[in-house]
Length: 335
View (spheres, helix red, strand yellow):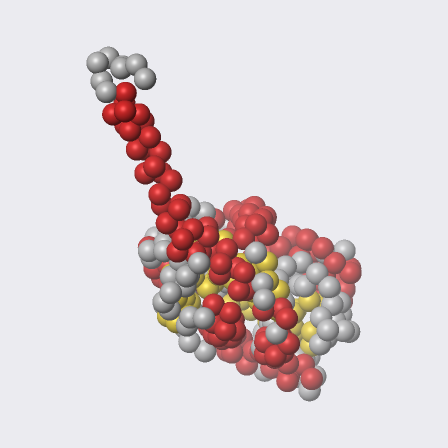
């Protein structure tokens, strides 16, 4: 081999190859580690308080996936600021496959479009892992409201612009955005009434102090069975098995109002893809667990695993849809 500018050709070759080895080594290391992943418990940050729908869903899903991973998933609740505190903590976590976020859609697809101080960038700081649970919403009305169908509800709202009250669980929440989408799609004007949670809103519905709101089935199943509340439509793409008489929005021409709450795992950006895939492999085994599906149905949800690519596409589509509505409706969250 000829010398280059008087240098030893072997030394020159080493100089050229060493950077390539440096780039290649982390990937080979991750590939070797994937065989033993996970070798210790995985921390799952839940940006909501214990006992709520997100927390309960996280615990059910994580307990189920533990059986297939062979390691514990430790739930760490970090509530506050509508989910922003816990989400920011997850964004700062070490991207080593042992830190995950279990989240609803709002911090990932909606907050970035509002005038909020965010200590994370949902697009830059997270890698989608998988949706595990979907929780369809129902349009619920107070018992004495004259409208008994969705068509009648829209007609009543048209006749009384700005007078029908609509409860929302937090400014800028996904159901708040869904209400604005309904306003636009049906050409009506519902008046948003913010609540700190679903329970006080349900009390006001039962007492005829609130006209309507979107709620998940588990929260009002007994009230619907006893006809103390009325369900006019579902946000789901199709009718729900437990509520076969409740039509989907699309059935009366409001397909753009269709949506479902999802709960899923996100990983801090930079988490090795081989670890993400190993985790997703375990999640893909969950739909065969009939007992798990029953537990999720009992809390008003549906077991529906969507892997990284599908999850990423859903997030991107919702960011576009919600971003347009948030800006045009001037929806503001609470700092």
